[in-house]
Image (spheres, rainbow, N blue to C red):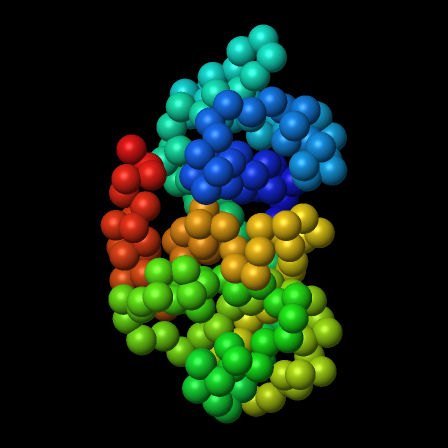
Length: 194
């Protein structure tokens, strides 16, 4: 994930999950341990489209939906895949076998957050590192386990990706059931996005 994407995730996390729509660029830079120029570059794109308003000492989030869809349009999910393999087990078994430190994304995250699945799914996406190769060794066949690169700050959000990260990842998946998950996710976020 690019540095600007981490900024979008943090802004959306604050606005959507913490209900905090007034931030400072310095606060975001400290939280992510990144430069103010990275935050400024990310925020300037949002300002240009009217999604945020920059005041003297603060940043006001005006349009969560614009930020969310903008990030979704930028995200390059396949680029973040560090490992993919075939695991000859049902997805629920694969999910149970995940080690501490793996952060669920996509379909599994949706299931754990909303205690529901809008469609059956056959792939598991987690954020982790190549150490998952030990637990899930390379195997032949179409991959059904995808390990995405986990950034250093991701653990601070918990064992499941943020709501915004979940939406953006689902938006970028190709499977036929991804569309069903996106539609359901939009319904779940409807009150938040307005």
